[in-house]
Amino acid sequence: MEKGQLTPDYLFEVSWEVCNLVGGIYTVLSTKAKTLQKINKDKNIFIGPDLWKGKESPYFTENPSLLKEWKMQASNENLQVRVGRWNIPGKPVVILVDFSRMFDVRNELFTNMWNWYGVDSLYAYGDYDESCIFSYAAARVIESLYKYIGGDNYNVVAHFDEWITGMGLLYVKHQLPKVATIFTTHATSIGRSIAGNNKPLYDYLAAYNGDQMARELNMVAKHSLEKAAAHNADCFTTVSDITARECTQLLERTPDVVTPNGFEENFVPKGIAYTQGREAARAKLIKIAASLIGYKPSKDAFFIATSGRYEYKNKGINLFIESLRRLKEQSTSKKEIIAFVLVPAWVNAAREDLAEKMNAKKFDHTALPDPLITHSLNNYNEDMIMNQLHGSGFKNLASDKVKIIFVPSYLRGDDGIVNMPYYNLLIGFDATAFPSYYEPWGYTPLESVAFGIPTITTDLSGFGLWTDSLGEGGLEAKGVAILHRGDSNFDEVADGLAMTVHSLSVKTDTERKAISEAAKKTAAKAQWKYFISYYSQAYDIALQKKK
Ligand code: 1S3
Image (cartoon, rainbow, N blue to C red; front, side, top):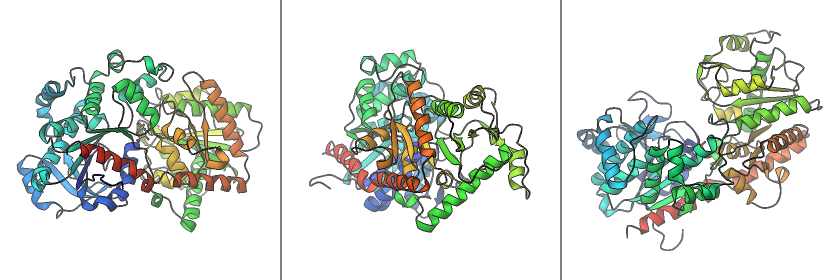
């Protein structure tokens, strides 16, 4: 720590993804927690939504004696909270707030936000109301706790992640002017929307006006909230340089610090546990493939995956499938490639015919009628991934050298087919690919290399650019292959990806192990014990403003 640097006595962090596994922000918070816990102990408090409303949650262990007195006060203030610990390394204190009975504050809250900060909620839709009420409830929790602990006597930091929690930040700023506020955006909502709507985000970035684009793309409410939070925070941060440029242009405030996302090595098994984990995962991959396709893949089949939130174009899911189609049609290699698309979609249920086959004692050599997917979907005919798989002619015939399997369920260990959490399955792959078009950081490739699985990503992802910044060397040196992606080179990237997958698939076991070690070394440089210093900087910047 630098001399004179201010540190928080109390640190509150508010996110929709506290004890709620939705996407990358969950990974940021849940891996960072252990390092923060070492520094701030139980004065580091996460606040998230109580989506289980009093019922048991797999992520949370309630502890009635934690903050017992305060809870009584909170209940008198009509705050419905549970206090306990998050079931992750570091076991940080968590307050879950049930905001479901607070919706009647909506009109007054939105009016205040307009009057105080010019946040325009008039044309809001979708998840906006729920997000804002949650963040308001979380801010009320901070207000109540602040008064309870005598917050005026301490350095108190309230940290808010993503536009979802923007109103919480603005409320705290208004009610508790001595609290140092931090706003971290993990994307700009308007940048993501420009990218997702097939408009060129990068070549024309300097010409976009965020407010005008928000009107054009019907994003005014989210954008105006995000912009107000960014402008009013004592410290504004984002997760990569590429997103920082977007913030400068579209939100018209340059982040004070870039806080890249780290990882925690203790999520990765070591030694024999690693080998056993990899074998178990591989056995599961083989079983799923064999049961769908009706024959056992060769022992040295090459398993590759993409994964993440269902953002079809931005996450490069379309590009992944297209590159495999090209490989299927062009490759003369004898190597069998089995690709998995691990992207949660609108799942109805685990397929019974598949579950039955997987559990049967004797292997049945017939392919299932649909050997492309593991769960039934509510919208099979409209699903973009399914449509692309069909349109690309994937049939998963025994004779096809490239096969592809869509696993549309969240992998939490209870999906009925995989029945393993994501990390337990990830460890069994030979490679992963995340050819994103829009990716502020990109945890999926970082997680992959942390598990020693080489990955392919693009120079439009924060993680890809960070890997580039580590110096010379590509896949062999870093375990990460970076494809150059721009606004208009889809075709070239699809070919590049197909070639990289091919070249990885024909590596010898020794070569593969060397790349796997290189991957782990890259991941080791992205541990929180290094990256936490960027957060310390952010806390300091915010607290200095309160002096
Ligand atoms: C965002 O989640 P996403 O998948 O919507 O935040 C993640 C954590 O900072 C980041 O890794 C990802 O690129 C962003 O897109």
